[in-house]
Length: 166
Image 1 (cartoon, helix red, strand yellow):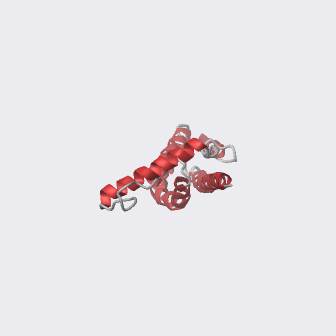
Image 2 (cartoon, rainbow, N blue to C red):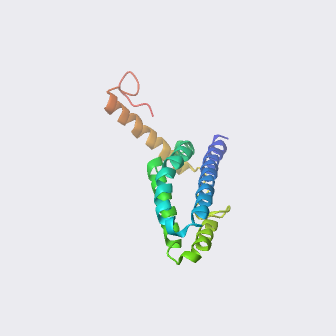
Image 3 (cartoon, helix red, strand yellow):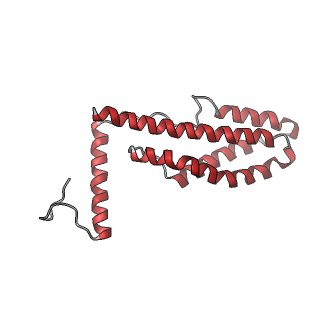
């Protein structure tokens, strides 16, 4: 029963993160389409928008990423996740902007359309079911964290006789 609940937690955490990513991609896409109407300033807009959007993205994905990490999913920290997402978005939009001015709105729209939908390559795949091997890995990780805390804070973990409890 606990295994089923744990798998549900993992799937729910990823679904929450994917929903957040989809919302951020929609926001980016709408802004990019609007900015593409002025091709002469598009690249300058791109840098300015993503400098500001970095913190919007950070605030949006912080809690879902924390939930994923607590569900023992090996996802990057918020800073790395946001950096990768923004670098990919900027690279794709910059590639779309490599055209004549008249074609920019259409190329940006095509790029942004590829981001959407439930089969978007920008969304994360559902996690694998929690197996006995994953449980053993989680237990080992917990043991290492306990030992690291003992070293860092000088508080012994375990029983009164000094044995480790785990």
